Image (cartoon, rainbow, N blue to C red; front, side):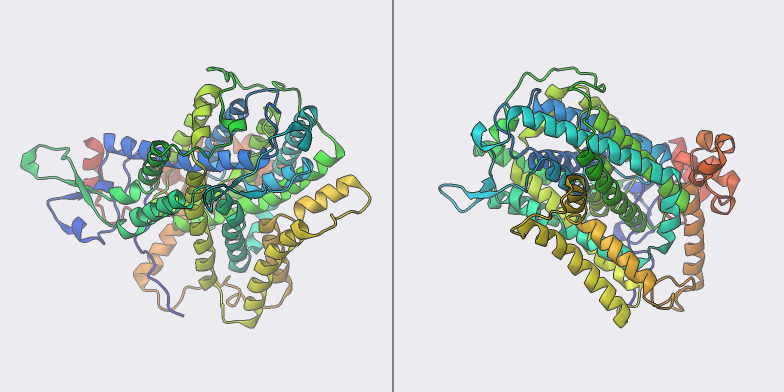
Length: 610
């Protein structure tokens, strides 16, 4: 089976304090001695680029957040909430922003955006006794639209709706507490080494496929606009992605210094979304449900605090749904960690990074539940797909997104502006980013011997059953009934989680069916086709990855003070790499291995001094 080169144009990392290291000189435009790569400069362009990328990641996060709220509240009657829906959205923004900042600062340390996911939505729908929105024909054309309740008598009662949402918030708190406990006990670090390519690949494939029905629902509001958005995103990120556009010179004209930037790829989300949004406004297309988008006296300033809309309701059903949320979200997040590290050409996350990541995700879900949000926080697959579109990942960008979300969470009136995003925009953005996740799952198969009958069975069985069981539960004429309501809630929630089922089935089959390490894709040796230089680059990559997953220096100094049972959250001596170098790089280290090899130390010093 043919293997691609070790480093095809890798995704670039923009760091939090330093200039990004330049890419290897692979493009013809970078070979001109009178010009420099856009990636090799420091100064204002670095912050400007970071803000630009953060804005686009925020648009993806907003699309996912608003889509999740629409799917959860699709049965809401007019006036069904005792508070403005924008205030509910603002609380979710605040919890997602706080969780993102904590995750990138002292969690897994990967540039991961935290957002609600399908793993929280499915148990929430089970608790509120709903199914996903029905589809009804729109008069006058062949498009479809979300069907929301228009009459109170045909929907849940108003008091029942508020009680159900409190119960969902209680389940989110339970899931956060359980997920945090799992991380503090170091269980992710013990399980993750047994999750090889045959566990990761089916999970990513199912993660990309699991949301296709919901994406189709949003796109069906106006297929023309949705297809236009998808077309523009594909053209900007793929067909025009390698086009370098010169920017203005940062030096006097006598030096003939020019900066080239792949502007189409870096605007592959913002430009298409802006175009389609403007067209939608120009033609007067209104596809946002009036029950959720009309102004409802949302305050300009609001300080999120627990108990704003009464405290979360803890019931046996909420406890059961919370357990299923925690198990499914943990499985999804571990796959997200592995995918993000793979896109950034890093080694798989070490045990301590996985444990810290899940612990802080659990903390974020606890805060979200206490603030009244019906959805917890987990690592966002669509935002990881956006990293692949941009070919760039940065902790600074993730920090900016988190801070902006926290600021927006303080103003429900401003958060209400994002409820006007047209449904085709939501569907188009999520469709493209989910497709990238799906393709990343397929690309993981080459790490194992896919021609092996053992591996073919594991992959096919895991993916098919993970998609079959949720569909069977939805289409079954009689609901699963054991006679005990909490157990029914637990089984209906967990068996409807496709990512959890794919991960669980893949893990059990991979570790119970005999096979060699090479066959399973776990061989430690390098392929013979690797040159000595590539081998050395890979070794440097592993050393750099150990430094990037490590804790910041102020937090690392506290590791000696924490109790022995919590030492699983700290890097082991063999994982710390060169301690002196790690302490010097810290937050300023690039997330890509060997990205600065083509730049001499003198050049780097020159860039920093500008």
